[in-house]
Amino acid sequence: MSYTSIKIENLSKQYRLGEYAGYRTFREAVVDTMKASLAVFRPKPDTEGLLPVGQNMVWALKDVSVDIEQGEVVGIVGRNGAGKSTLLKILGKITDPTEGRVELRGRVGSLLEVGTGFHPELTGQENIFLYGVILGMSRWEVARKFDEIVAFAELEKFIDTPVKRYSSGMYMRLAFAVAAHLEPEILLVDEVLAVGDAAFQKKCLGKMDDVSKQGRTVLFVSHQLNSVRKLCSRAIWLDNGSNQMEGTAREVVSAYEGAFFKAAETGAKTKQQNCFVGWDILEPKTDNPYRYDTFGPVKIRFLLLLDHEIQRGIHGIALWNSDNILMWGRSVENLHLKPGLNELTYVFEDLPLHPGPYRWQVSFYEKKGLMLDNWQSVPEMIVATEPLGHPLDEWAGILNLPSEFKAELLEKIK
Image (tube, rainbow, N blue to C red; front, top):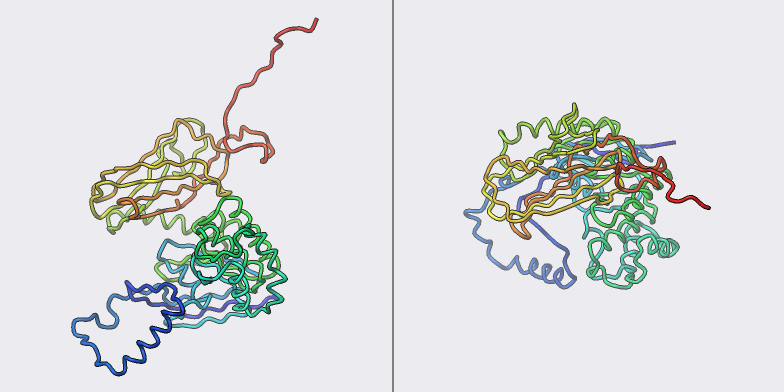
């Protein structure tokens, strides 16, 4: 018998632009407390010239309402800044809403951005037990799952090392293993596929599928729309902090793809910003600008909107398949681009890919270390060419190469 696992009513969150707070050490917390107690003896600072309350504010979420049933796997899609991560942070009790309310039925396990949830000064082992306590589990319950968590994360050699020394991939592997194995009734996952190698990413998707089959609720934020289609039964599309649409995963993802590129066609004329606004296949021409179905030359372009001149830009590109395996990539440096809508074009003599969905990832840096955008293509590129490999997928390999074969007798046996 199912029940409402997550109930969200008129949820809103407002932030003041420019504020940031990282983790604090115990020493810093003590110093801050002492400063606050001494403040009563000091005169109030002169506030003349400061911004009044309400200025320099932004609504990350505005009047979002949704009910999620127990056992559902729900995807959340939307552009960067749409409010997806903010929603999960509120559900994970990392931040409080400005308005509205949330009802959660069951323990919540959160896997949000790298850096959230663990204390960097503690070892991997200590953080596993700490997280279990936060979930309301006993030490014995965590110990029962400990070996399984460490084996899944593949971090046996580093489990006694402080996590501040972990790479982002190691951190994410441990964080996912803990969140998925300590059996929360609600699992919040934000871009788990953004870090780590392809094999581990595939293992994460399989584990989330197992979690949902056990009757637990999963909220999954991802820019990889093919993963949302495959993993989720339902999806929510957030746009500018508001609930734009909800329905089946395929319906919502298709509507998001269509609306995104309809807006991209006019975005260059109506809005100045630094970002990729679209892509398409120029050759071969088909009814669908994101699909090709013949072998031969392929010409692809990406549209980059700039509001100022770039002197020494750096552009990167990568092509991923549906299993998140890198198929190809390159970078171009010292680009000089003018303000306005710029076209970045690639011409391939052939793209011998197996039929299926693929994803472009493009990035642009104004200079080394200063990123303007890192964009996952929407919609995905669909390859519909004839499959030339072995009919069994595991024998097909990565490339779909045409070949000629012949057999002939070189010498008879006497």
